[in-house]
Length: 316
Image (cartoon, rainbow, N blue to C red):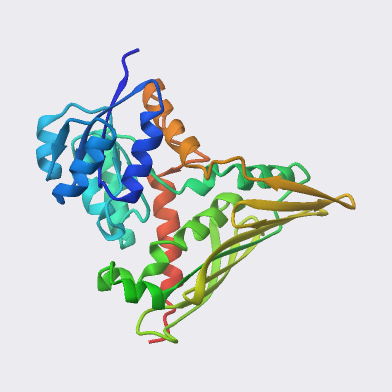
């Protein structure tokens, strides 16, 4: 089978991260990059020997025949960038969030269904080796009973950097902690029954405290904490089941407690993006639907709906 022709939209750090991974797949040809910033697209093109370089998505789509596109634009533009690709029936993996509102994600899903394009969101924790191993160890003994997900950053530092527009600064929950929220959904493997949440602006003019208690239809209970009043980045998870608990820190290491013993989990060098990208490309090659454990656009709508329910509780 011929190599897959792949384009990249967005030549910042995330886009270049995808380029690095894709350049190492023998069945992929990176044929084009797109970014409105000339230096960004030229630097990326030079680094990965990609000669076709475009300053607009329309120019890219009009000029290239592609098997897949990877979207790695600034977070608030992901949905906007993905829509014309899906409208043309091009298989699209977009970074999170898949839009800033659930309606935007629904539109992406519905568009993909009309054109037959495969759509997938880059919630790579669904493929993270430590998380998937710990989840399986717990599920081998029975149902997951309780979950904890945390993702923290500093809103003060982000404001000082001045890199993000106001719409994103006041919704940073969708930029990073959405990873933790989607991970809880993926581990629970159930639809949501109840949500109780508190969202506040405390030390800044932006939403910086998020706490949610989520009850899933299968009885699993999850606690989400997303704090931006801290001074450092932290991500961690707990997975509890039948006489077993996993504590995942970083997420670069973990400890599973069961049968009176401790099992150490060490991250093998991948955060899940390599496995995620490989899965998406294999779906294209085999012409099979994007399904679990991946976040297809149906899954994306569910995660965004849950995020919306949490954010509705903002203490105005």
